[in-house]
Image 1 (cartoon, one colour):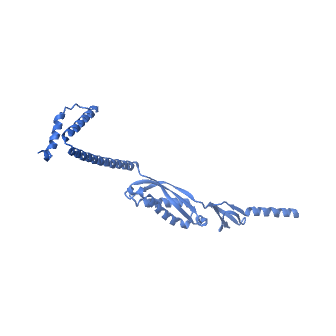
Image 2 (cartoon, helix red, strand yellow):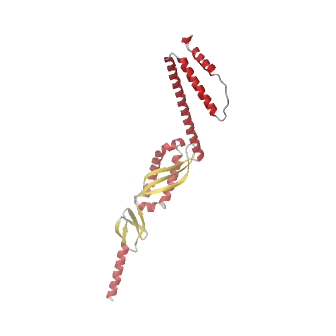
Length: 261
């Protein structure tokens, strides 16, 4: 009888010891409730609770986590419709507040980011949006860090991943860039022509046989032009008198030169 009683007591003692031990992994924390009320937070390592009275209601990580915000629509200050998304780097620093202050912390953060991101995009015009990415990230971080502090959270950083305008806006941007490129190319070409003419004028003035040089250059241009016309699929035969053309241009130059009057 005594041995049976000792065996029962030993069994209960072992069961109580096993039931009271809780091992928490490094980087985690756990919440303990006693009869439905918060009792304490278990830290990493070996912990003891009172079986039947105490229960571990939550064990979660305190390490940094990421939350990927799904793409959603936002409208810029100048009414351009964009598809935007972001990623949040955050961590729990007070597990008690996170568990008891908010029902679904990730959903709440996602809604907060979506609302704040739309608000920040709406303050910026489309042309300035891409250069203002870091400014928007900083504004998002300030708003989120302040809003999530009562939830026991710390938002470390926010990064906008995508700012995608609709296809028609992308096409308009490409056309604008192409038009600007062509405009600059034409300006450079015109500047090169002016410089070439200036150098040619200086060369003609520096030599005593400017008439012969000009005749040679005009003849060369005439030959090149005829060759290009001949290579064209819609080529036409043109009859021109190079002598008359050259003499006319030379006479025009001579008329503008006071030293020849």
